[in-house]
Image (cartoon, rainbow, N blue to C red; front, side, top):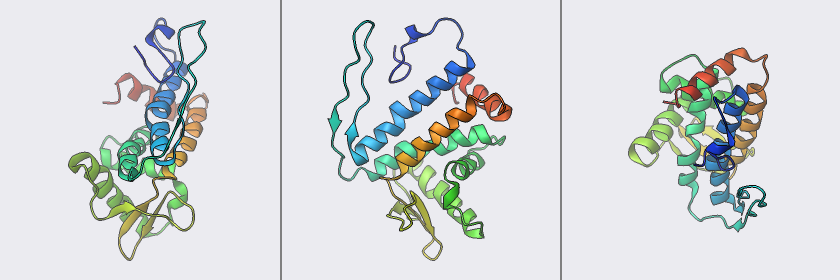
Amino acid sequence: MWLSWKHRDSDFSGPLTFDEKVELFCEQTLGWQLHIADLITNGGTTFPQPRPDPEPPEPGYPVRDIRHSGFAVLQICLSYFEVVGSFVSAKKQSTPRFEAGVREVLPGIFKNTPDDDDMLDRLYTSGRCGLYHAARTGLAVGLAQPSDGSPMAYDPKAKRVGINPHRLPDALIKHLEKLKAELLDPANADIRRRFEKRFDEGFI
């Protein structure tokens, strides 16, 4: 059974170590979620497919971007904020976890004004909840091209969050690399403890 795009259950024996849990989570998130989102919106090359030793991996292959895939990218990507929020926040409810995750993953989009809270509220309600409960975003969240190159921006006059689906996957992939390094650092006791608890619970 595949446990990630590159790991089978036969690759592990006995209880998983902490480092193995981090490796599995990061490769699951990258290979089954964020890399897929990046491919469908930007095109690129798939990851190679591991094969049993001593066979070499099956090479990746090029794929084209898919037209009108922006909202599918949001469906794939927005859950990343909430799971990260569960590592960095002690809160149990989904709303504060989601908001903490956005602040952790995309700190550069915040202006330190009351508009930040308005943006998070609209992103959660129209984006996260709209997509997962109604299969579409509300009017407060849409696709856009923020002029500063950010993956996401807020227009306080229109009270709308604009998300660039071409930039968002890469921003999350870069954060995942940073998160992995933090989790593997024994000095980060709190995030390591929350991560392992969530991993062992199956992220329920």
